Length: 273
Image (cartoon, rainbow, N blue to C red; front, side, top):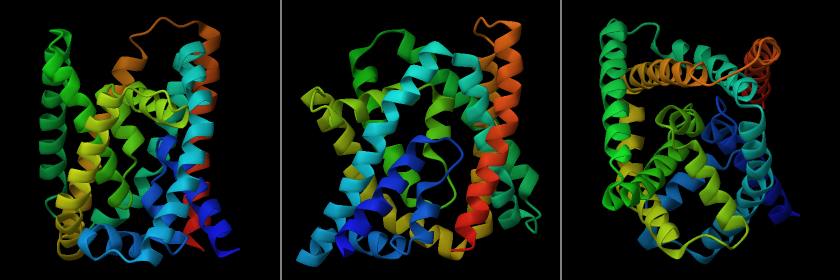
């Protein structure tokens, strides 16, 4: 029964990893598995057999959640791009109040937010310009970076990794990786690069992130808020660059409002657990 519960918790965390605006780490905290997870991955040379069983069943549940949902998300993006994107943007915006509560007393808010918006926007365009050049080295390095970001956003509470991937234009890459893993059809080189980035980030960043959020929590969340605002600006620009009908726009506006409502409700539910 204990391991079945771990699988169920992992399943919900995995679903949260796919849905923009919802932090898998926050749900892991609510389920009481976050601290043990961080403790295990920050000390990879001291893992015990019980820790391995804990990781296996938790990750099994997460893999099932991701594998089941990612195909549906891909279909929605391919078939109804604008309404789906507006739903996702609403989901992200609905989670912003949770972060603003952490930074409202920080006098450096606007300076840090502005800096993050500028830097992230510049980085986004540099990456896209380089990717358009068709360099295999750059394209392969993207898979490594996807692994790094996936690990970091899994560890940091309150950050939706999906939102970041969507802003970078890498969300479909992430879905393809997850789908390939769940179908056992992923290219080995892609898997090695993704896992390499994920493991490297997990080992090297977990302790640094834990320290940052413990000693500089307000400052860290201020940076996160700036990052999210920059992400939303880029996502809106890309969303409305596509062709769409009036009906799709009206449905999208309704889904946008629904997304905000859903994220707020999810956060309220898990904050009370």
